[in-house]
Image 1 (cartoon, one colour):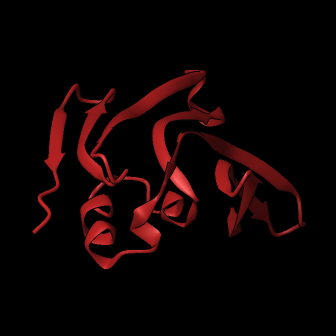
Image 2: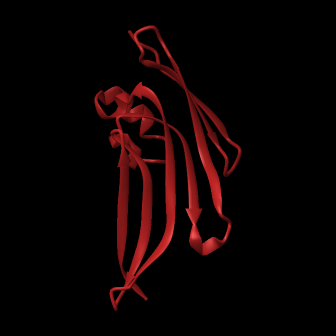
Length: 123
């Protein structure tokens, strides 16, 4: 029986690129449960610097990446316990205006096939 959980974050260029989830048993043995892998664009992530973007982006399923410097464009999960290998969980496509603010986010879930569009209107 696992008593503790361990979460390890791997950073590159100001972005979380991997999150490893492990269980620690009563003997101190660490067993990897699975890993998440993230890809980013090169544009500034406004969700951690502007409150309006924080609420818009926060509806996406990956909360940890709100701390990254750029916008997450894809996530892949590899859960060792299900023997499914690496699977794409979602993709995000950002469209930017001339001030380089996100104007639209197209979120596509590979899990259930849903496509959601978020449109930003600036006044």
